[in-house]
Amino acid sequence: MTHTSVFLVLKHFIWLLFLIFAVDVQATSVSWCASTEPHGTQYEAFIHVETCIPLCVYLDESASPPPPPLFPPPPSTPPPPSPPPRPIGDQERRTLLQSELLNIRSKTITESYPVIPDAFFPYPYDEVNYPPSGILVGEPVALEAEIPYCFTPTEVEECVYTVCFEGFVDAESSSVDNTEVRCYRINVYNEVMVFDGDDEAEDTEVSRKMLPRDGLTMSAWVYPECSDAVDLNQTIMYFGSNRNFPNEHSRDEGFQVRNGIKWHVDTDGVGSFYYHDCNIGSVSTPAQYFCGVWHYVAVSLNPRTDYGFLYVDGIKAGHEMPNSRDLYTYSVTSFNTSTFPDNGMDRTAEGIFKLGHYPGEGFVGMLDEVRVWNYSFTPEQIFADSIDRSLLPTPDPTVKAYFTMTTVQYTPSISSGAPQIVYKSIPPMIPCVLGMEHNVGPVDGNCNTEIYGWSFSDSLNPQCSIAGVPQRAVYMSDDKLSCSTPGHFSPRFATVLASNNGLNFTSTYGADKSTLHLYMESSLYLQGGTNVDAGASADQVCEDFTKGSQSITVSAWSCPKCGPPKASDYTPQTLDLPCSKETC
Image (tube, rainbow, N blue to C red; front, side, top):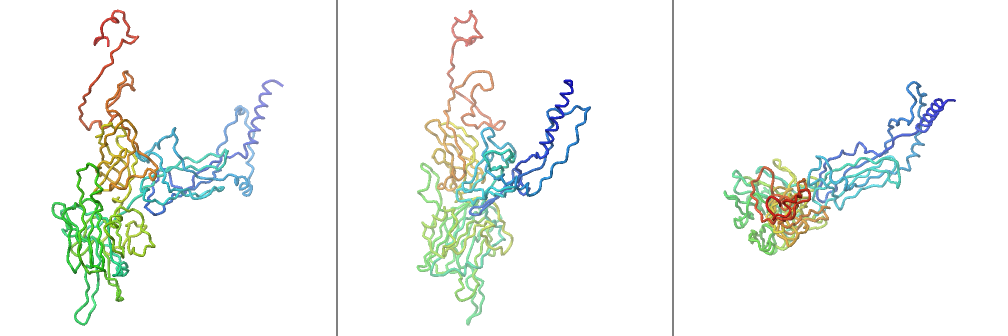
């Protein structure tokens, strides 16, 4: 037998071995189920409401074309026909795959893959951060595993989260390929109710729940809109009555407004809040409050003494920033009244509680966190309520109504018009900081920068804190503040936080992310050279030089380092000459 014949026989033998062992070979991998949303999907979440991302993986046995053998037969010699694959019964297939337990895990982007490189996750949402209360719910199972990711946002988790997941075989060693990584964005929103002057909402149950001997406290976050077209007097909310019963003298029509909170705005945009009932008329605060910003307004009545007060804005003198010249407006206005909600103790059900409208006095603006207690609060208790973001305990017997305006929680019924529910942050929310415009600034401060995050509110007292030093902030949007960096003693990294009320600052634990600002000396050492890495630019200290949008003037004290010429420029004629412009 010639060498050529031996070589041909060897090639055919290898080909037959490949066919024998390739019959049962199938490409197996873990794949996402069709029910799992694609990469980049965004989910809505709300405080104290569970949100789940449905995740499902299965073992994908779809066959792929077998790789060609190392030594295929020559073209002149056709290969023998392939026998059909040996059929595998369902029971045998299940037995083979039962040992492969499928699981899903959260996926932290590694240093070699530091950010998510696509348009779904722009800065500052391009880094992975998980809510602390989030959890994958389920156990590894064979063939197909449904393991959703769920979390219920707490007060420190009203943020944006970029979460990534990967399906895999839960074993120390496995030849089964994992799924591709899929990332999702969870936006934790707050919802408010918007009124246009004609809309109203009502609740017909709360009035009859009020026992007169136990008192009344009602509160709300109020955002009056600024417009020349609005009514000067606007009804925010009130307890009223629809009584119209005959009696021996005339008719019992009750009081149309038993207890109400209203807003009066002047033509210059400055206004006052006032309490009104049909017994004593109106009692007003000073005209010192602005439209276009959130205010906290509450009324407390004690029927045992007929004493009441109207409380506006939970900021007190002791809460101002040190060395600040800003003056905050707040007020507690006292009055006496014996009027109380129509509670139906005479077995009638004519009492009503309305939001946003009274004939001729429609409210234009936004309301949120409307709360009613059958209890007389003190000013200190009302202040504590103004900064509290926790869900009121439902077993509390004094809580008679609580409207968060979140459609999946508690909203009043719509009785007229169509008040809208929109996304909007309010001052008691704890904002999270996710990034900033200028991560580097000078140690002497005064670097104006934008702070990027979530749940920022158009409030009376927004602040940012860098290295523990609070600074007044300017609200720009619900995801952006403007702030000026304070000075520091020496170069270092400093944590950046934010607050809507100057009291509740960002929880880096809740955001699962820390934003750092680097303080640097404002005088830089410039390294000579001609390559692209040479020198130092001004934006390494404070990156305020936006191309094409600003004109700048730069000046500096310089200290040139004069030394001998470089070796490549050595000439005996000039080496011994004094240092001059031509040689240095």
